[in-house]
Image 1 (tube, one colour):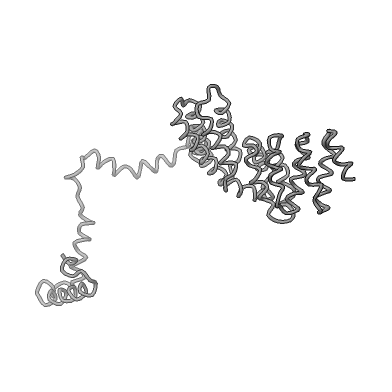
Image 2 (cartoon, rainbow, N blue to C red):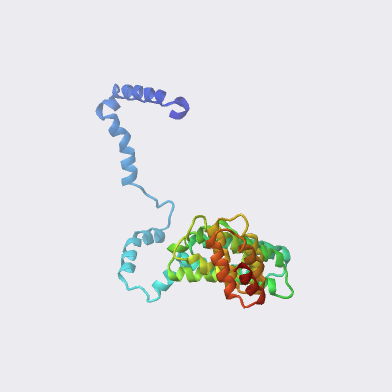
Length: 303
């Protein structure tokens, strides 16, 4: 009623002041202070609340005994499995369970449309794991996507490949690669394995970690980048050589040497034409590791 009569605060105050004045002028208000009159119904309701009309006697008794029962349970010894039960409610356990559910869904799906949606969800899940630093938990998810591509008959291979490549080029992976120098040995081992199962789609992301002269930390990107390398990565490495700073070209030359096949010789020959001696040294060193006549001829030509 007050809100209806006085929608603004100033008017409410005027009405309340007037009401208090009028009540205090009457016998009812003169015998008891208005503040005491206002508060007494609340106190009475709190002290004399009776819910017997709404609940049964048994329910009322159980409520009255709830406190004592809680104290009794707290005093009892907990079962030995309690720690294991609580662990299943933790974030790590929930993530592993979510990943396993997605893997099972993809493995058992037979409809291309639904499988495409699951593959997309799995790619998004991998990015969430990357942001959480759970690199090891990403591996089985990517492996299942790769297995779905190789499975015969393949149901939605393009969607599965897209999910893998999207994870390999994601900003989440780039952020993870930028922390390589700060990772523990265990984290780095998990990250290397993840890079290996994703494959060459991670190469541009790993190359982008060389945003300044030197490495993000202790040569850590070398191992991760090499895990993504292989004969299939040579075209991507060769394409990344142009218009890059000298230190990026140097690291890519090392990558080509790690691959160590004759297909790596042409892009290394291109690096031999560079004027930067640091790049030339890396290219010659990589050619030395390749047992191929073309690599030997390239070295001799440069000499």
